[in-house]
Image (cartoon, rainbow, N blue to C red; front, side):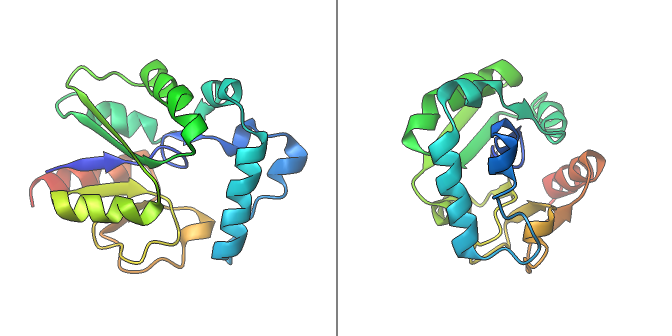
Length: 171
């Protein structure tokens, strides 16, 4: 079974690298609209630099990725600004061990992730709140994606994610 990991919001905290006044402009509320989500993306593009991307902290779910990578290749699937790709790849190599291989895929639009996992019959671990289909998505729970329905699973902890991955392997 192929498991794909999103980066931002799952493995890495990009918004934490922004100035506090800018962080306050990001809408991570339960009632986030697609428009305000994309406006937040514009703020990230405006303020992030390769250096700040490299300094971004990892999120707790990176522990589950490390655990899973002991006996699986790590598959990364992310929608990134072109200018962020090089520092993002460096960030991944600085924070993860790829002893069993790595497959990094960058797509142009978030919906392209769904197309790829459907084609591969895989699953995606992601926090994005606006996919059209979540049947192959393991949603990392945040306030902004609580209105998502139809997900394969929703996880609120590292332990819960590990259990879902182990269970999914048996299907």
